[in-house]
Length: 253
Image 1 (cartoon, rainbow, N blue to C red):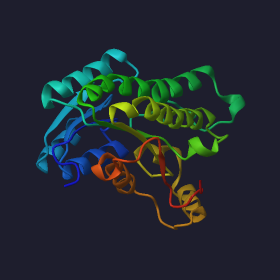
Image 2: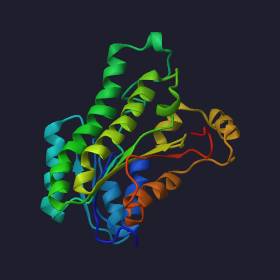
Image 3: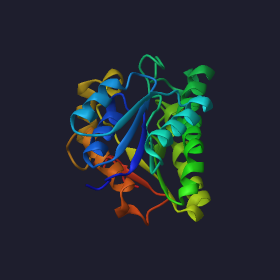
Image 4: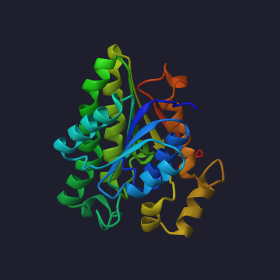
C-alpha cells in the first residue's frame, strides 16, 4: 500500500472528487480526516467498512478558526499530519447560482464568494497544517486546481481566476517550504462529471467536450484520485512546485 500509516486530511470529502480521494487513500493505507461543510459521516462509514481509520469533521475552510481546529483535531487523533489535499472548492450549483455568465455580468458577490473559498480557503488550510509539518521536517500538500485556471475561461472567469491563483500559490509555497522538506504540488483536472458538474453541464455538452480531447474517454474521479495518490506517495518525493494536468489531452501545456 502506497500510503500505509500516513495521516492525511482531505477537504471537501463528503462527495464528488473528495469522496473518491478519501476512499482511494483508505485503500492505500492512509489514516484519514475527512472534512466538509456537508455531512462526512456517510463517507466515513464507507471508509470504516473497508477497514480504514477515519475522523469526520464539519469544517468551513473560509474560517480560520475551523481550519486551525481541523489540524489540531487531526494531530490529537493521529499524532501527526503527513498529507493535506486541498479539494474543497466553490464551483457552482446552489452555492453560486448562474455560474456560467460573461465577465461583464459577474457581480462582486459572485467574485468574492469564489475567491474566498477557492483561494483564501485553500491558503487557510495550508497555513493551519504548516506548523505541524515544519516540526516533523516532512509534509506533502496537494492543491486541486483546474485546467480552467490555465486557459482563463471567459464563461466563468471568477472560477478560472481562482484556480490560476491556486497554481500560483502552489509554486510560492513550494519555494517557501522546501527547506522544511515539505512538498507542494497541484493537480489540475479537466472536466470530470461529478454531482456538481452534472448540474452545470448537460450530458450532451459533456460528450462534445470528450470529442475535443486527444483521448476520447470520459475522465473519471478515480483518474484524478490516481494522480493525487502518486503525488502523496514517496514515489513523488522529488517533485515540488508542479501542476499535473489530468485532462485526457483536452489542452496541452
